Length: 121
Image (cartoon, rainbow, N blue to C red; front, side):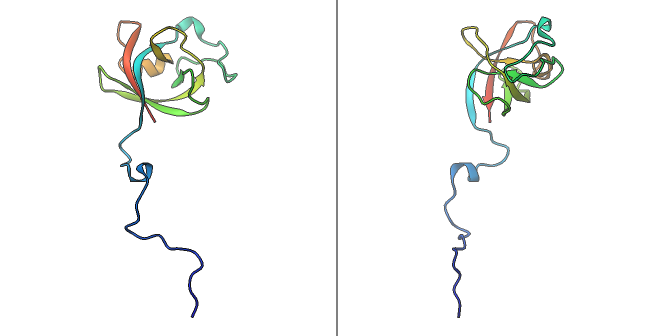
């Protein structure tokens, strides 16, 4: 009789925090102030070499990998949007992310130049 060479995982095996997390929960990465790009930057090059498009769902972050996707949630409206990180910044003290105009609109663009947000993975 042969025995299996590999192990079959038990139905009751312990799982890591990521594998046990329900799909609707997101890892909170950072909370703080978000701002958005000026319309004057339309067409300017971003850190990854593409041109800024205010109609695309993109954002700038100081440290998140270029090309990564994160969910940004407005703490005021509860609305959220998934953006692709394609630029570096913001370079204004107290700001954690710069959003494209389309991303800011999806969150309920306020009259002010910034809003409180939470960044999630």
